[in-house]
Length: 163
Image (cartoon, rainbow, N blue to C red; front, side, top):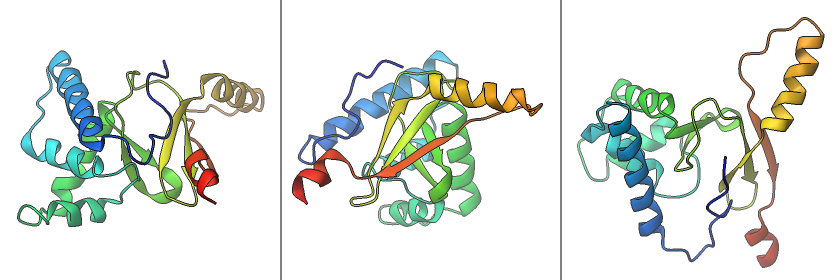
């Protein structure tokens, strides 16, 4: 994964532009794969793009309910499944929450999530060498690993500067 964007955007960055770039990326991915980027999928992604913090499914529903009739949970979960299957959203396991992803990597790429305990923002970095080491160690015990999720908590540089 090429690090084209900062891991944690500056607090005063142009978030509208950031979200617009993510929508453009999503449209390109869906078109390239012959997938439909339906209005509800777009709205769910938009709710996740409202900040750089992960949202739980019911928080997504609450965000959507601000501008449309409250969607059924199953509708949101189906949209989230589609977005995850296409690499447009990640699930943050420790938070049981979802994060929009506009990085240009395939769905098999291994990433690590950097979770700021102060502001709640989540950054994403490549973690293939780390995951490879873990997977090799697991295979050495006879275990057959399937999916590696790496989550690291701490404090982002922005919060460290303001502390």
